[in-house]
Length: 291
Image 1 (spheres, rainbow, N blue to C red):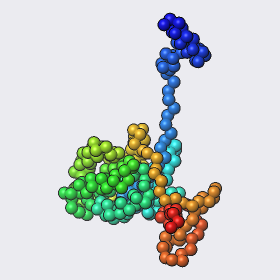
Image 2: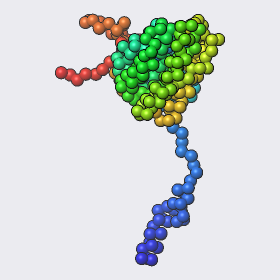
Image 3: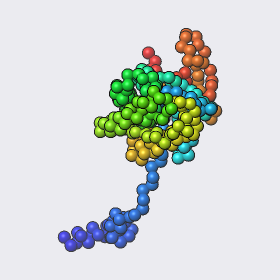
């Protein structure tokens, strides 16, 4: 037995090239693991005219401020959506002026399936409240929309913004009670295992508005700050997964040009062209097997 132990100790020493105490030293090493790289983002800004950019002189909404912050923090990112508005380099978004929660729900399945974002920034409810539309069930509609988003894009993190301040007497009569219901909705989603986070927009004041409902650029910057905080918290928690594959873009090497169908025309005989790359459906192609 002693001979065996001596042989084992000699073999261990030879293999390590150091004294036999090296395993313990290695186990207690204090060297910190390298930090994970910031997550790659395919981000869908989803909502109404605030998302679209009404009130912003450039039309960029909070989106351009948020993009700059995320890029500076090391995220690779692509904004996605069926609309394009603003002077920013990547103006894709899913903002619809004048729309209520139920109207966003009407397009959510199709756009989420098409673009498969891994982060959704959701700011919706202003038009429900300002229009006095079925107020008692407005929060229930928002809960149903969040459930719809998490079903259509189960890998996505959903950042739910509270409804921003307004100077509309109609909206302000309902906004505090509506916003007060959102924490419980988000907590229930998290309890169900969904990556849903509440984003508090209470930093905006009446001084941050361009009119009774829409932010000016000071307000949009505050919205970007809030959504960015949500992205960073979700990333730190390991919520943000790599974007899943979607229909690809035949792209030229180095030039950033893509195969494009002008206007998305689907008529027989429509010619294709080469155009600057973007995320709209007329540049999304799927390879099918030969029948």
